[in-house]
Length: 240
Length: 321
Image (cartoon, rainbow over all chains, first blue to last red; front, top):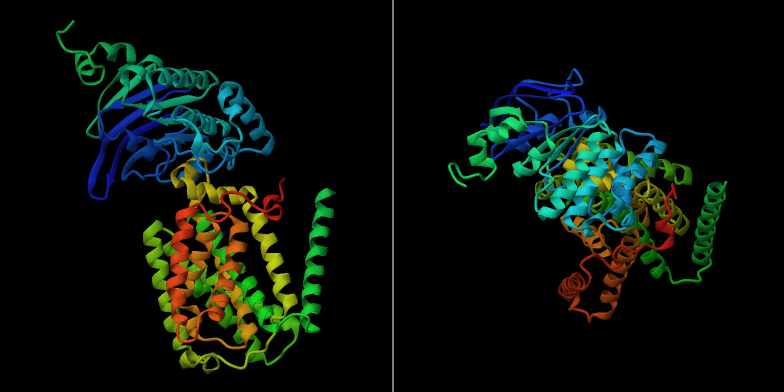
């Protein structure tokens, strides 16, 4: 087990955002977290990566309790969070962005190697290596954000809505890349609104509803659940 | 090896510039009035480079820069005057004390206020600036030597041309090496996206504090030079409007652009003086109409600063290139 969240409660001020959430990710797995707007998906990721601190419950990463640790320490332990909206450093070049990915964790040599690896996986980033990240297209920025996370060679990558604002064709491309990253041995927790795309690469999924895990299981099973079909896969009950 | 020869070359150039400047001044080849304006430009540049680290590179909106300039000025002046000496070694110690005091206060102020972001941080630093102005005004209650609202007089005129050029040169090299290092890039990444910076393992608060302390330390250094240029200090030299002056220079020169800060600092000082000479007597206040108009026009034409993202060669090459 690389990540396990046990009975976590998170508040924004006095507002309860996550209620008794438990989930886990096994080594080498792709797990998806789906749910409607405001269900608390991003909140889950933010509490794992230390941007928010849970008020109750435990978060274990590689067997170590990380709940309440500051974000930069968690990142150094090998947990990379690719935040929503990509969070690339717009006024740094593509290459500098990638270098920053290994800033806290890796030696210079490892950073160079990591960047070469990213370039072989995303050749388009190599072509644009000295371009400012802010001038890239949405899809390229997403590639860059994932690539930057890769340079630190994490054990677990948290991806927050990588499909956001991308054309269906690009979504397919990005998801292929996520699978490629996963084949390199990185476990992935993928937050998505696009459940259809998420189910296509994840082995297991959790469904979050108003801050609570409503369902979880293998994606093959969840796909056939009427409730999931109606709410997240756009299948009309009783229809065609 | 190349790095060492480069460093030696830079040091030699700097020494030559300082000596030449000093000789020109000492033998009366240049008008002392213009010498003083040049020195003021150097001092302004040092302070503005500090604010550029804080606001331009790290993205921390500070409206209290003049307060740190003042802390450095009063500290250096206090050290110099209370010891009664006039040696250059003592002046060096006084400048160092000014930097240390500004940096220390910046650290103490930064610990609580740097948890705020953007506009809120601006308001908090503005408040700090006003508190410091009141303290300067009433400082004679505690230490009569500081003069309070009557001003502090009788300081030794230690700030020679050589001192200004040398200190500015060192400050320029120091700032360039910081912002062109991976440390500087970490500061920029905080400015660009703080959450993402934390997600890649940067201890953002510690870096913000360090950037703030370094920037305020440079303001203190500039203050120490300023105190011993005119031999007179007054609290009104360190009020809110002086903070705005530096802010205008940094924005005009371009956030995160060092060449721009250098050009805008000298441009600003020169503009004030030219208008002082050019405007007919009695119309002096027209400056504060003309300058804002010029600002508006410049910002409309070059919102990204005078130089955009271009830098002169000196500022381009960092340590690791």
